[in-house]
Image 1 (cartoon, rainbow, N blue to C red):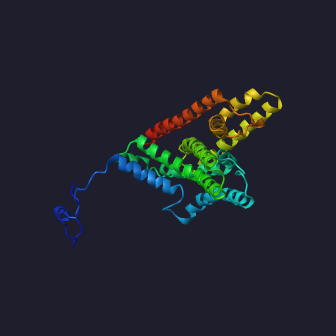
Image 2 (image 1 turned 90 degrees about the vertical axis):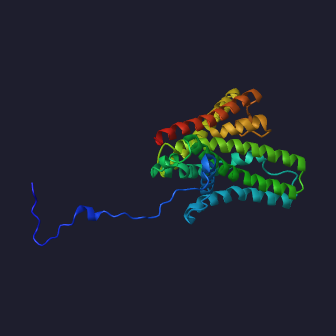
Length: 305
């Protein structure tokens, strides 16, 4: 059916509306850096983000404040040891992270959601996988970055203690051995806490929910285990205390270091696991780390579809 055109309105042929513009798109002839470079870049970016580097000033406040809070008690202990010419440090290297567990838990609760929740909330995860990077690469980079950030947080005060001990002219061999044991302890703690924090944070894109969930899991598990251990100690059932300690990340690390690193146990009555029980602690720790990695890979395979 013909459509009447208004009088005086010129009819422009449709072919005259077509224009071809040369906007200068060119092919990329540079090097293809591949998956390894993508993994390193994601790791570096995530590690820097764990301390707010490259982000706003507001993002730097909490991680830097927690870092200072972790190091200040160590500096005070060093000052006291030097001033009083003490023969040993007030606190063992392996005990420092256990004493400061509240600060460590707060750090992982704040930074695990920061590492993964924004990618989930803004739905940018599939964009990562559109590049030459796979699910396992993304998970390894994020896991390694948070574990490295936590290792920096927990190892820095040990370094302060070690330097102070040498300044106080304490026995070099004993202090070096204790420092090495402390580094092994905090390395295990960093891997375990990072895995737990990332698994919980990956469940929700809401950062606030992730923070609350991580704090709840770490705090409630430790409180429940400590209470049950105290009850077992009060009832004279000391043999049950090490087995109860398997159900909290903090007591797991405490059990491993008291069994194999010569640390003083924080369990009621000072009853830590023996070598056989300590082997179970090590297996549980390694199993939780492997399980956390596996759960993260499965989770992001679904998200990246």
